[in-house]
Amino acid sequence: MITIGIIGGSGYTAGELIRILMFHPNAKLDFVYSTTNAGKPLSVAHQDVLGDIEMNFTDTINPNVNVLFLCLGHGKSKAFLSENTFASHTKIIDLGNDFRLEKDEVFEGKKFIYGLPELNKKAIKNGQFIANPGCFATAIQLALLPLAEAKSLNSDVHINATTGSTGAGVSLSETSHFSWRNNNMSHYKAFEHQHLGEIGESLHQLQEDFKNELIFIPNRGDFPRGIFATLYTHCEESLEDVVAKYEAFYKNEPFVTVTTTNINLKQVVQTNKCIISLMKKGNRILITSVIDNLVKGASGQAIQNMNLLFGLDESTGLHLKPSGF
Image 1: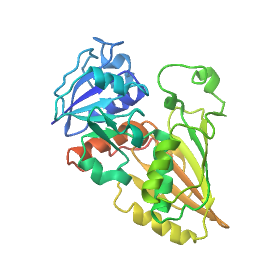
Image 2: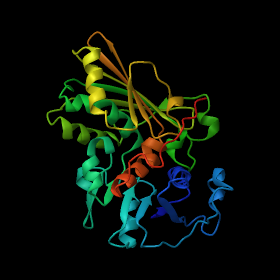
Image 3: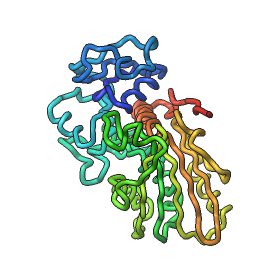
Image 4: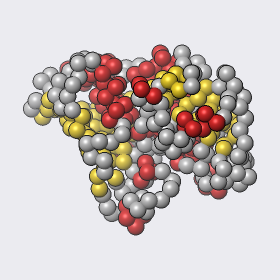
């Protein structure tokens, strides 16, 4: 069994990890660390696990676990790792943004691999420390990687993506309160979202000469979970040729489906799936990408990376049914 520790156990991503790992055939949850809820049952913060798991939050760590998931706020993972030492065999998967960019990938002798399995599977399998991608970054990269591999990204890419309220985290802010979010919509960090950096680096990994702009408008939606992203760019190729490139790129990827039909969020919510829809109008290609921001965009992908690190089938424990309605 793979023994597991979770740091920052009270938040949404930790809750998703707990729900999935409870039924993972090769995983054993060793501890869930939370200084604010230490000594209290997990169900205090994650009410849906009541009756399924008898475990309390703790404010102590077991440094010998096989894998550690860091579910801390952005910028806090480095401080935690500087203050705590783990066994040489412990694999670490960070769900924050501390190690995603190339300039931050090495920290105190640890080299973090960018954990997008559809891009870096071989490196992940041979790694020990993983920087889990951002949620917007996951949906957008999966939408663009086949074009980058084909060296077909030769124009600006216009991106409009809407995320659910869980993307803002558990702590309330003005724009995450129900009374503000319900029946409402807004954009934020237009043209300068922090995920643009990691997206750009991944695209350059496949198409070194990509120099055009990623024009990204992120939106807040009035639903709790999911990302609905639409992208368009110049493309002279036929739809059939583009579809063939996407199907070839993802033919061995268990969680990515390519289609030419209209798609919606409920097809992926509560799953580790990404569905990509392709449409052509004149010389523009429209790419729609949908994921669950908490699963494929965070905790599910983290478990997918764990599976790869330990030589398991990457879909182990991740055969999850979408909500459907």
